[in-house]
Image (cartoon, rainbow, N blue to C red; front, side):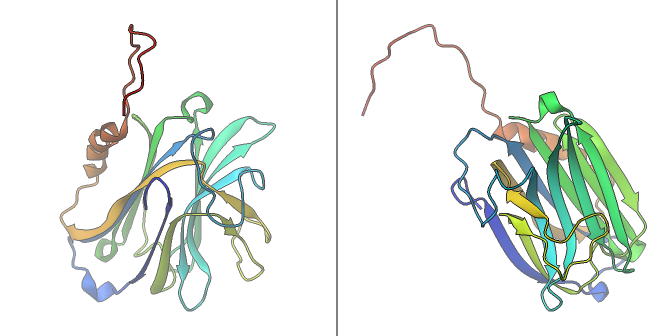
Length: 225
């Protein structure tokens, strides 16, 4: 994933035997909405085809069914923006969470989503930050946020909900545009002894992506080769 190609895919497998009481897996996604920036369309669904922007999904490799889905929606006429999260957990139950995003702090502001699972402890944490404010922090009692074991992981691009999907609250034929902005992936990691407040460290990482602009008193500066 880079500035010119805002998409990332990965195949991975889930095995509960890989996890001991203190072990976890985690990953995160930074996103910043810049609709007037240089945004190359990825996929067949463009920004004029939908008012919802796809960020991330996980699909079963064999079943071809969605296990996990994240997207932002610009909802009219309510004039609100929502981050929506759907996932089918290892207990075959669907879960749905929403966070309302401040309209005046959506464009050009970094947002961060993180998922951390402690499978042995049957704990899942979902974090959503509208920098620098934490607007979603959920701890859920499930082993894994996926119902399949062999998975295909995607960040970026568009998405179409076909007739084979059966997601409560999402209609067949729904379209999700590619995200018109920038995204960065905090890589998929595994380890031991991750605390439930460790996500606070990402605020420091977000600052690395910020561009600080200052007014220049010198005008009509000539171009240089």
